[in-house]
Image (tube, rainbow over the protein chains, first blue to last red):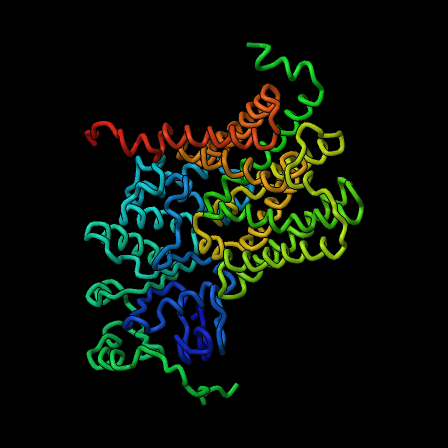
Length: 246
Length: 288
């Protein structure tokens, strides 16, 4: 089994306080993994670590080099929605790896952008300024951008927060398609029913990993209870972690 | 009509030089101003200007009224502050505005200290208020060169620059261009301010950068159009300001910036995008 991402005794955090504590394991190539856990469990931190926006405090993250680019949908996209740019241009950014800073956006690229917009149901929105989109429409546009990134590894941070059922169904269909195309998808989710329904594998995180494996086993009540008990707040005067062997 | 609008330029070479200088300045500074505005860095130009002043003054003290000494002094001081602030903002918790404030204030104090230690009673009015009506060949070539560099750099870095504004984290996830593009952009700001101070003085150079940009905001929803409009507004301000200063025998730098200010006020009142007209006379609502 080749791994898309491998964690080696990974600790990620802020200002020496761990947010993800001693995580080891591998996300298999082509896995469809749900990342679950209470607020403050380190789910977003872990995704940031995989993308490379955050360096480990200790341990390491190995990304399969053949994964080329990682497509990352942040929880709160820090998108300046007042910027005068059209939906079309925002989505076309997904072609960065293909076109770069100065590469041509030719006929075939334009077709790709149009197809991506059609796939997420945003035909006719091409020339709208991004500031005029609703929350759900924006999320659809960002999924269209993810589509164009054509990445082997896709990270989604709470992709369905505050979306209506129809939009969630459409976007879930995209995730199913990515899975069928053997892409690796890791999604942070809070809806356990949805996770049981759609995600074969789950990682339950409460700073330290609680359980990782087939979803049905991970989401057992005793695991969820354990995760909830692990306290969220860090201790300002915490001692140096004694597992810091290395 | 001809007498009013074109005769001064046909008749006097210094007016022709001035309008060419303003054209070059408009082409370089206005697009930079649009990006500064859209990144909510409208006041950064002001801060950079304070940072540049000591460098230019130092060049003046060392080499007298020498174009290249003052230019290089200004660029070095400006870039040092821009890069210092940029690096601190990217590697520490301090935000860009705060680190920029720290750096430019130190630069300004240093400049004032150096000037007073030398004890010479230098006439810095020239640097402060510029002399668009006395542009010599070397200065014109310098301003034009800066405009050329700016346009070329914008052409190459347009996409990453837009991305860095709209969605910096996305840019970080797909490319390492973010930091160099940001620092390069600040260098362009410095370059255009230094170019501007020869014509308009260090105090007013930022005016030709920002006023056309904020005026253009009221006329376009699309970035490309906004940049084009800003360039046109900047050049129109230069044209109108020069005529105003010619006919009224008023100082040219302030006249140019005042015309730009007037265009801003008109845009604010009548511009179709988010201006006062939209707020107070929006018209009846549409069907869909």
